[in-house]
Length: 372
Image: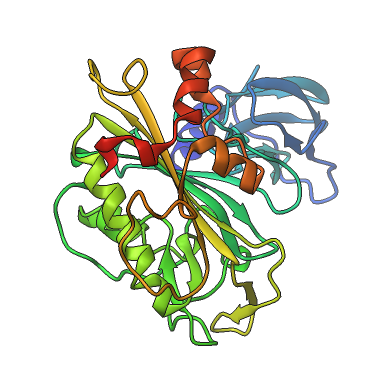
């Protein structure tokens, strides 16, 4: 029994004159109307059965009683406070009567966490989809209520359909690559691949949120979550994909914030890689990056916004440079949306209006000198 229970019991006993003799055959019991309750604050009845005087104590102060002592059979009420934790908790009522001690345990459920949903003010978030192959997950910056990145987890293919994140000098920070490969704590280990030794099948662990986009130690470690990996050909990962990552990072240093969506296409893929336990992971057939640039009082773009998109087949390219001549790679946001069937920046219209959104997403970036 806890100290709180001991004190409460001592106080209750002190309020009774003398004590009943021990009666081995006496019926003494204490029963909750319901032994399990919800997380919200509430109350319920407790039945006390005895023919003698009784004293009651609670093991925890969040569970209190309408009376702590009495005589004979009776019904009292107990009040339990709200459980603000996500974990369930228990309190024990101890009844002493007729020389006997009996207990009853009340279990209070944990507070259900609010399901993670898309935030309409997060400009980088694509239109969120539900159902099989879609689970929205978001990570904040360590120790802050500010978001770092979000993704749409596909448990069927064992990759994130897309990873979305804001990018600027402050978010990039300073530090070194940690190589802190590990499970994403927002998913159970069974929901994600085990990649401490990489993929079986000759594929790289290709980042969607690049390691170099989050350099402070705590944030860089998160980029090595297995949920951020996809199986990539080395000739793709270390060549044209690295170039695309570098371009995006460079653009982010010349604006207030660059909102980025990086994604992979698994539909139509017949290739599989395997994690360290032999679990199959779908090898994407293509990848893409879409960026929405914001710079206050900008002299280019539309109402301080402009955008660009890139689409890559998952293959070894014969070149690593990406410029305005690569019209099969570089395209408008509208063109990429039509290609992949996903509304990439639906919240831009809410922030800047339909006219601005339409112009930004339709603009051909190969004709805008800023990008090159």
